[in-house]
Length: 204
Length: 145
Image 1 (cartoon, each protein chain N blue to C red):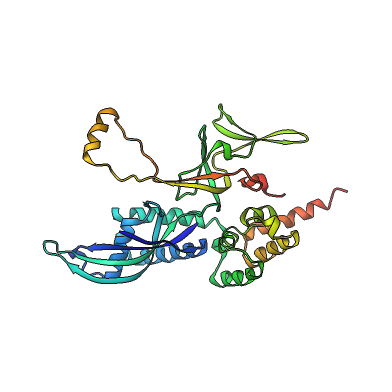
Image 2: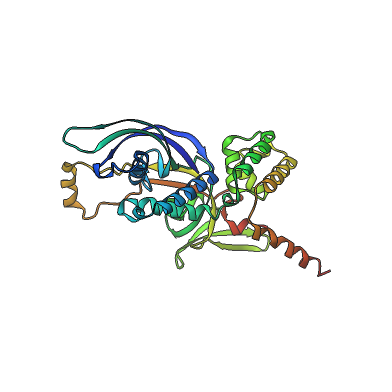
């Protein structure tokens, strides 16, 4: 679920923080910059693991702050393909089942990856697995708050950096609010035995 | 900012849990500045991640248990990713093993799967509350004849 990512960055320490230990200031700045943020094509950054190398700090003319090039390792949430994860159902919509891990919310299980046959109950806005046995069909509801085990089948990164001023003028006249896209989304599947709500598979 | 290696190492849930616990201790000791607006993101992600991880089997693990587990896993010839998933989830049924181990029907016989389950459940500590329930059930089943 978590990986270690080696990164290099230049950290700016303002003069009023010079009394603190450099390592502490740098750790704080890196966490301020990266914690709980998605880095494109890398994943959701959690926290700093360690600082591997500090190069010399420079002060540039016109700016009293010190600039230090830092080599460090960061803990990043980036599940590998086909990894099994356990999450909580946040809700259902016609797009599929939305699952959350608490610290990461943008996980979708599309209708084709649910245990088949499945139907969407419009009245209760919930997906249902129509499980057939010899006695007849059981309707297994995927209720909000239930824990599910799912497999990660796809991930997508979207670059949400702001666009330049020229395109901004064109879009403000046409739309009021620009669509907020999640920078990192996971697509899951529960169409195998053992996947789905944990309560479906616990042996009594 | 430059990413030198986006996949330098895999981390188990226990390692991340330990790191966050230590970081929380450190921040508690240093006191004042963790409520400043810049630190809010770190606070949020730490809280949520620890909340998630404390509900997984990793909270009962320790470095010695991890070492013992990896030594025991050597004989089963599993890939790093498979061992990591077994470590993070502590599967208790054959169905779960089949999900985490690729092509388990071809690579492992039923006995080997049982053996693997035994190793996993004996080395990795489970939830002490959940382990007590099956004993109560066994007592009731004996009555109706």
